[in-house]
Amino acid sequence: MKGYNYEIKAIPTMFQGVMMRSRLEARWAAFFTECGFPWTYEPIDFGEWSPDFSLDLHRKIYVEVKPMINQELIAELVRVARPVSEATGARALLVGAAVEYNESERFWSLGVGLGEGSMVEPSGELSVDDIAIGRCDGPARRGARCRVFGIAPQYASYRCWACDGYDGNPVEPDAEVQKLWAAACNKIQWKP
Image (cartoon, rainbow, N blue to C red):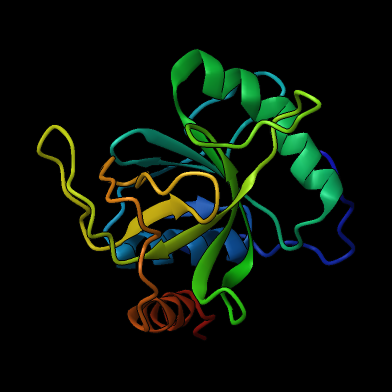
């Protein structure tokens, strides 16, 4: 994905036998593992977009990892991921340097995403939503349940991307998210 030129060189890092292009990607792989989310690294090339990961949950979630998220990257995500989402039903998620706690809104943010439940602006433009991670109490459809955590848009629709459950409420913030992120960071630290 285009949208930002980085001055800091990425450090290739191995995690679970997979050589990843950057330590940040390895950190996210470790976090997904800690959360119990099955992932595949660089799963597919859509021509204009080769997502860094796919999460194989209720529906596939394609994940793009960037050290900084800005408006250009968000616009680029919408541009390249919207046709994929519309054609396949998959969701797209743009994650940054860390899982962050939004103090004012009280939720753990994975990043921004689009997919089912994304908002359409009055202009007809598709907008992204903050994607929260936390406890999902929604009744799952088709028997699936959240493995450990639910993932859901924070504002437009609260349908869980992990299990497709829905109870009309956002996922609940859980302090365990911070512990899992710390554990993921520790797993990929350089060890001489």
